[in-house]
Length: 402
Ligand code: PLP
Image 1 (cartoon, rainbow, N blue to C red):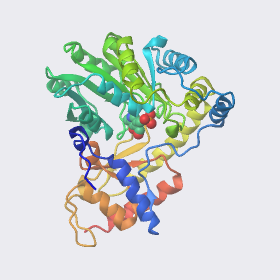
Image 2 (image 1 turned 45 degrees about the vertical axis):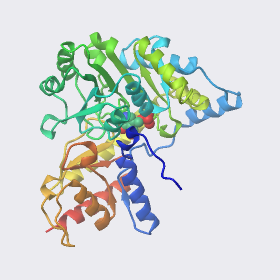
Image 3 (image 1 turned 45 degrees about the horizontal axis):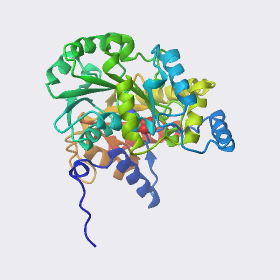
Image 4 (image 1 turned 120 degrees about the horizontal axis):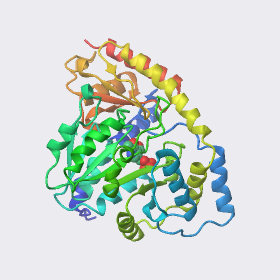
């Protein structure tokens, strides 16, 4: 059989490292190993019952046909109302595009705007998919290391230094995967002051973790701090994390009409509309009782507090307390150069992660996947029992090092 010849844009990208880590953990489990899996990047709760009921009702009422490309009127109205109620942002119905998850929203936004050589600024640590999405659209990811000492956040000076004539986008994610860092209004204003000097730079805000935050406050949006950026900002969000709806695949873009029309054109010739049943479920999530959100965040907070304390009690490891999202980004620099009981010297965070997995059966993801080393990411979207077991295993593994 002939080997298929794939396009250069495919050859430039790699499969998601988090999927690869999850696959490796499942493989070891299949082989009979006991694994404390701290890899998973999705809520471990079921979608709330009233949302599932709304989906069943939509199906039974025959809402099983194509919908409008931009999304059903009902869902777009729910998104418009949500943006005003929760974020103080006003959008019209023709400024919303429903997509198959926030992931496809970000990819599509890049696909309609960037050409070969266009640059996209991505503060690191970043969500693993951003650089590959840019590469898949023939663009150039420009990653900027945002160290732990500055709270893993981009500074105005770094932003100014990174902008060139080819810069098309700045990608912001707050609270962030993998660090949980969240920008304040003042920090957004300082970044906006730089952007005002560079009108060619557009902004994508990935707001997917906005409700998973631990100080009881509302997550500020860039456009609250800098409304003057509205005509070059796409606010991207979805129901996956907030309502434990990762499998339903509903996200959206809120932005100026010209972008929405372009997205409509692209998506009408590729995916077509999103699943009609999922759209009905997402509308019920946004319009319905929000008790689940408060309850799940309280549970994540309990887990976060436990795990931050447990990690910081292990000599050689440390982590900041994340403002939001459900991950800890653990600094493992003190383990580099140490030797495992099998005689292997740990030379980077990939070695540390392999050692934790092979040695103690605890699965986490190396910081190299997120663009800032030496760290590893662990997820707290798992039971307290699993976190306790994971912490015990990590402590044992670290103690066994020479
Ligand atoms: N953005 C970030 C930062 C994420 O961590 C994820 C999922 O892990 C997504 C977007 C994807 O969201 P969706 O399920 O809506 O595609």
